[in-house]
Amino acid sequence: MLSPRLPVFASFGNTNLLWRVSGCARASRVSGSALTTAIVRRGVLCGYRCTELPAQGANLTPQMLLEEIFPVAAYYQDTWQETIQSVRVAGLGTRLPEFARPLENEFHCDVRSLLHSVVSDGRIKEDARPLADRELEGLIGWNLQRG
Image (cartoon, rainbow, N blue to C red; front, side):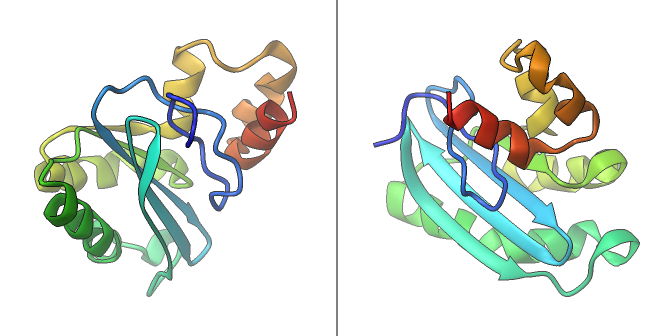
């Protein structure tokens, strides 16, 4: 069982940076053409999927991302009979606002940057700030996991 927080995902190798959400939260990380999506409910991993995106970088559209995220979200909602209450995304950088509105419309909840959420919660130690400034959330998760 995971601790009662939600993770920052590298490619889901690190599960140490976790949100404080009482219900269900979904996190996705885009890295090149790879997409990792995880759904955590009260500290328990309830859904996980890694896929290859049909495009990367500037060619990736919000609709393409939604089509890849939807199967694990639908599985969760059908299995647990519960909606997703929070969405965090990593790896989109400055393009996140372009993707946030379609994700909010689909999931009817708050969509934010995973990294910025953790920074604003004060969970990033001073020595990891340079990693956060370069949006290297995978290394931050690794750094936190090792203690």
